[in-house]
Image 1: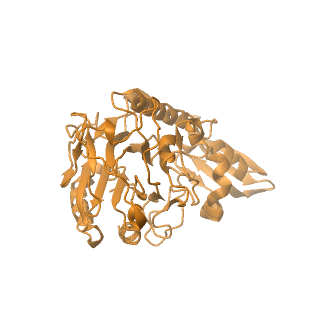
Image 2: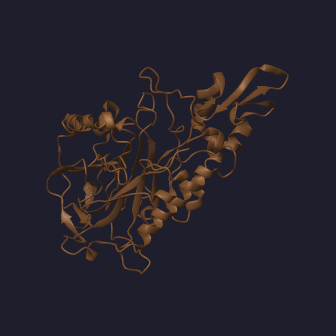
Image 3: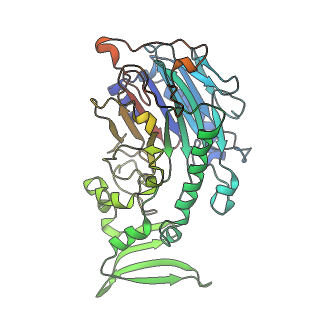
Length: 414
């Protein structure tokens, strides 16, 4: 929390959007009771006292597993930022955001958000887990955009993940993300620029990475009494007692070089194997990540740099956005795409932050029909122009419009 609040104190955003996954942690049935206390503690922080309006959505109702996503969306608005509105998905109009509201527990009937758990047939082996999305729609400084919190499927087994390229897990993620994006494009609401950020669980091409790491080695296969593959050990040729890499269902151990191999030069050598986003390049984009893989870090308060030997590290946590949103970015201001707490233990995931500026001026024509997506399409909402002079640029934490800088903070668990 200290690293997060320190970032706020430095950047002083006027609009802050934070998307969380696995609210309540892995042992949510036992730990969900502590979430509200955590939220109260966070919002009582001195760094947040000038945020006089907020919306918080916490999907905590694990008793209804068919709808439970364990997602949490936080949106804080600074007192200096005026005329902020949200879309009401039931009333189909924008409504003012003038107060503080925290929605927790069962939030199905809250109409200023859209929430859904992915259909069961999209889950690997049809086994349901806490995966889905929460979408909100905002209008700030006459600009309209969606903020989407998402959590996609993970790789359950390292052995399965390296069987093929692409892996079966990647195929499952592709199908459900395609399904979700298609839903946004074809539903009853106007398509607007969107920012989709959360835990995509995108992984490296495990088969190709293993081939790179095990040049000049000999594989040794260990099976169970039922003749099922249990372990693969790659030993150095000519030195059978020297194990270079060991892989099991939940073990990925590169020996003494494990963490060093993935953090050197911010893991740039891994970029060739980070290609899950390529399948969506016609719809989504991302800034280059000049930071090491965001997962899985050791959960040791004395170690903020080491990786656990459980999974092949990867950039699971992303801030993606539509090409229409990219068109709004002021190219005179270099975007910042990084992590919070780079040197500090933040849990198994490092929170990702995106900061960028948007140029002043009329909203660009980005809709398929040629109708610009600005306040004229939002009945009952006041249309404000971009302020002139030096004050035309405002620091944000997620999305910004009309000369507002935005920042995005993403936490893994609460």
